[in-house]
Length: 293
Image (cartoon, rainbow, N blue to C red):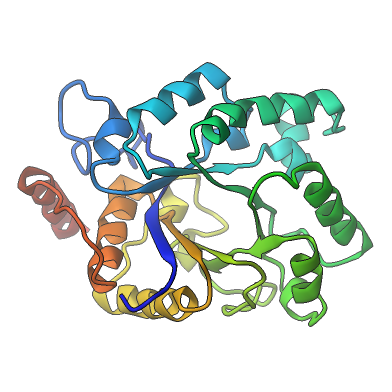
C-alpha cells in the first residue's frame, strides 16, 4: 500500500463467546485458548468495547497488555456514562452525573496501556441522536479538556455535524480525530466522507444491514458480510486517507459469527498488507454458514 501512515487493522472487540453471533468455531478453534493471544496472531490492533459498559479493572488491562506482541495497540471505547447518559440511566437507574471520581476511575483503567506504550486511541462514540447544538459542542469541549492527554477519536453520527463547515476547525482546535464510519444510511446520517482533522485517521465499518439496524439486537444488527467489491471500496477510502496522515486505524464491527475478523483479513489483503490466513477448519465453518443463509 503506497502510504506514509502506520496502518492498524482489527476488529471492534475480540470476545464473543455466547449467543448466535459467537465467534467460537468461526474464528476461534475448539478447546481452551486465550482468545486475545490467538487474535493478536492475526491483527495488530483491537478495540476494547467492554469499557463502554464499565471501566475495566486495571489488573485485567495489564494482563491484556502483556499478552499481545510488541507493536500491538489497543483502542479503548469511552464509558457510556460520558457519551450515552440516557442509556446509562436505563442500565443503572440513576442520572449520568459525571464526577471527578468517574474520570479518575476511567483514567486508572488506561494506565497499563499508557505505561506499556499500547494505547492507540480513546474512542468516544456518541449516539445518532447527539446533535450539533450548543449542548453537543459543550460536551465535545469538556471531553477534550478532560482527556487531553490521550489521542482522542470521536464518532459523530448525526448529519448536523457534517452539514456544518465549522466543525472541522472545532475538532482540529480540540485535537480530535473525526471517526469515519460505514453503516446503513438514513436521512439523519452523517455524511459518508468527512474531513481529516488530525494526524491520525480512524475508521469504523459497522456493516450495511439496514433491514435490522433499528429493529435488530446487539448481534443481528451486525449480521452483514462485506462483499469483495465492497471491501475494495472501503480499501480505496483507507488508501486515500492513509496518504494524508501519520497513523491510521480501521476496525470492523460487523461481529456476527466472526464476520469482522474475516472482513478485516480481506481488507488487509486488498491493501496488500501482510496477513495470516484463517485456518482451513474454520473456513469450513464459514462456508457452511454461508450455504445455510
